Image 1 (cartoon, rainbow, N blue to C red):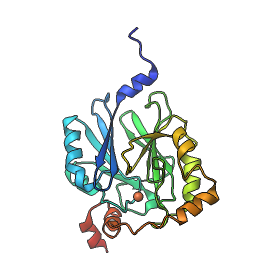
Image 2: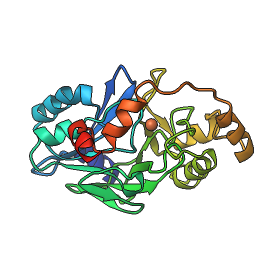
Image 3: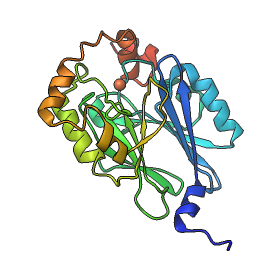
Length: 256
Ligand SMILES: [Fe+2]
């Protein structure tokens, strides 16, 4: 024996951790190319309150954090990106150009965010907000198999993000999920920005079969989204202005 398939080899390259911030039920994801000499790493959707925890894990594992990325401008928590930038020399913040937020790297559909030999491809998935993106691992044989999709709030496990503020649109969200996420291979792992019931991961196949909202036709989906009667997010007035400048509230007050 002793032979490894291509997929298990690529799997060994990826170091992956799913981290939880309890108060906002936010998932932060740490990905690193562990077989690269520098062990370059990225954090997706870090939260201000858990920056110290995340950075101590990064240090312990000997990783070189190069990007702090956001899937969108969050309304329920302050991103950890600004704090991390202040603590990790040379780290670059990443968000979509369409979000209108400030960051070192403004990405668009089709862009690749490279860390070592691994990368995340950017897919535009607006609808929860105008600037939502999904970060997806590559399809090449040296990339992790099965593929992984970091969907932010566009697609949640058996749910989806609300569409009633921040340039949201239920029609747009329906189109985004069906054209950009449900077209991925069925075994693609879905890693959302939140889960409020303790679920950690799903697959494209599972959500295409069991998502109570997105399995419906577009008209039914729209009426579901219009009748959610959700309250105004309590963190919104603090979080959104802060997240438009990557969590550095001081620069927010300077520029306003
Ligand atoms: Fe959100």
